[in-house]
Amino acid sequence: MLLTRLNIDEVIDMSSGCRKRYTGERSSFISANNRDKHYHYSFKTDIPFTEEHTLVYNDDLGMKPLYASMGMMCLLDILAIGWIQRIFLEAKTYEVKYKLTKYLES
Image (cartoon, rainbow, N blue to C red):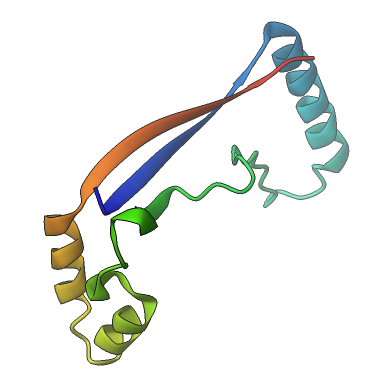
């Protein structure tokens, strides 16, 4: 396989002690900082240094095809025909789904 579309599903899981501590810290943080009616609190479940969608290729099997190069993508996007590159990528590559779980313990 020369090219593979890697789709990483990131999951953050917590132990019961960690979840209890997180819930307590979150509620105390929100109660201490809730000063107006338009506040918004969010918790990002992102694993550092990972991208959800990545194109992976194998150097040992040959050079990266022209339809997978960044220069070709920019050129086709300027000409408003970037969809052609997407069709080639969809037709000539496989998608591999990978589930990455980060488990937090207290």
